[in-house]
Every structure is written in structure tokens, then in C-alpha cells.
Figure 1 (cartoon, rainbow, N blue to C red):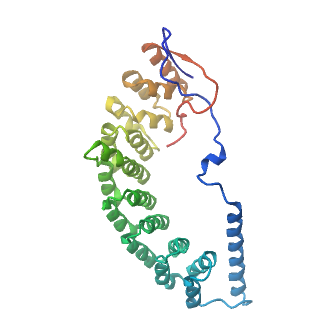
Figure 2 (figure 1 turned 90 degrees about the horizontal axis):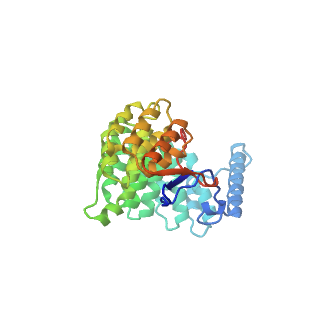
Figure 3 (figure 1 turned 90 degrees about the vertical axis):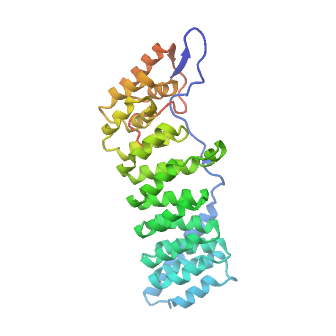
Length: 345
């Protein structure tokens, strides 16, 4: 459903209702490589067989030094070298030093394999080795290291990752925020909050920093610490480009019971929060959401309610339409007309 202004004047282009399908190919920047996937699976299977034979005494397992030598052999193919790199994980702590050295090799694929292998070594020294690489001059290495530290999830990585937040390198800061959220340590909340509130000195700089602010807000939501509420409310009220994200983060923190957030809807400056509360869809919040729409809401929020699937809120949207000179009309079912009640945040 959508809007049409009474008296023959057409309202802004309505959002369509219903659902649609995206061509699968559109989800990929490059077409999937079936042969590469099969090749990797075959290589993994062969590696597993080789390890099994070695464990059963039917083959001679390589020593650590031999495996390192194969991983370092520049005359071998990248596939062969990565196979050797992955095998190093079985040596645990002993493999940390050679894996750290392999991260520095010129072959990007082998270096990435070494980073992934370090992330699989369940030893504090692996975290230390990865954290030390956050000072690397190669931005690609730094980004890969932050991702690996997030996958490991060791709280020991919080301090070095927080240190990276002040680097000013957006391409490094955003993965660091994602990693900190994955680790889930609330010690990171103050530093992340400062990034969420940081605005550029000029419109261009402010726009350039929007991706970092949005990532910081998302990280606060994923961390789930209610101590981030004042920061997120400030963003909700003062940063229009990130306000929707701030509302989603607040709803995520309180998703088990969003009632403590309802008082925020008494202020017009917080009306953007209503979008996220519709997505949460908690029973008993409808009255507050209806009042917020009829008191402070605009066309976009009314249309969000109109297509959300909650009877009370859809009726509220129709009331809003009557009050503002709009009529409701239906369109063919395709696309997504609005958030679905209870779809989650």
C-alpha cells in the first residue's frame, strides 16, 4: 500500500508492498568459481587422507622444519604452499613463530593462509603474534589481522584493537570495530563511543566519517552493554545520517524487553527509534508507537507502519493519512513496503 494526496496531487513515490527476488548473480561482484571450490575441497580431502595415513603409521609425517620449508618454498605453487601452511596448525605453539614470518611473504595468498592458520592456533602466543602485526605498514595485512583477532575472540586482543581505533585509517578502523564487537568485551565501549560521537570539522569530512560512525554504533549494539545508551541517544538525536543505525543499536541492546526505551518516544528528537521498535515487535509497545506517529511522525514513518503487518499500527497509519490529507491505495505486491512487525534487529 502507498499514499496519494487528496485532491488529485500525487504524494512522493510510494514504496511497493509485498516481496521480490534478487537475481542470485547480483549478490556477487564476481561469478562463483565452481572449479576453484571443487579444487579446494579436493585438496582438503587429500590433506585429511595424508594426515590420517601418517597417524596410522602408513606414511611418514613431516617434521615441523620440513613443513616450514615447504611453506617457504617460492618455487612451489600457492596451493602447495598453503597446504603446508595449514598443516603447521597441528604443531600449536611451536608454529607461531614460523607462521608469523610467513605472514610477511610476498605471495598474498600464502600470507593470507598464514593469517588464517594463526587464527586457528589456540594459544595466547598466537594472539600476541597477530597483535604485533597491527603495526604493519601493509594495510591489507592490518585488515586481515583485525579479522583474525575477531574470529579468535580472545579478550587479550581488546587493548591492541582499541589502540588501532585512533589510527584515523577508515579501512583499518571499521574491521577493528567489527572485531571488538565479535570479542564482546565491554572494556571497549568507551573508545567505541568516542568514535560514534566524532563529527567531521567540515561537511565533506563529516560525510567521509559516516561509515566509521555507523560501524561504531553497530558495534555498540552488538556488544549489548547498556552503558552505551547515553552515547546512542545522543547519536539518535544529533546525527541524522546515522540515527536509524543508533535506533537499531538501542533496540538490539534492549531486545529482550524494549519497554525502558519507550519514554524516549515522548521527545520528537528521538522519533527515529520507532523504526527499530517496529522491527522488534514487542507486544505491549503498540500504544506508545501509535502515539509517537500521530504526535511527531512524518510520511516515511507512517508508510513504515502502514506495511508492517501489525493491525493497530496500520490503523494508526491510516489515521495519520486522514489527518494529513492522504488516502491509502494498494499497489502490486513486489519489493518491500516497510519493516515487518517482529522481524528482528
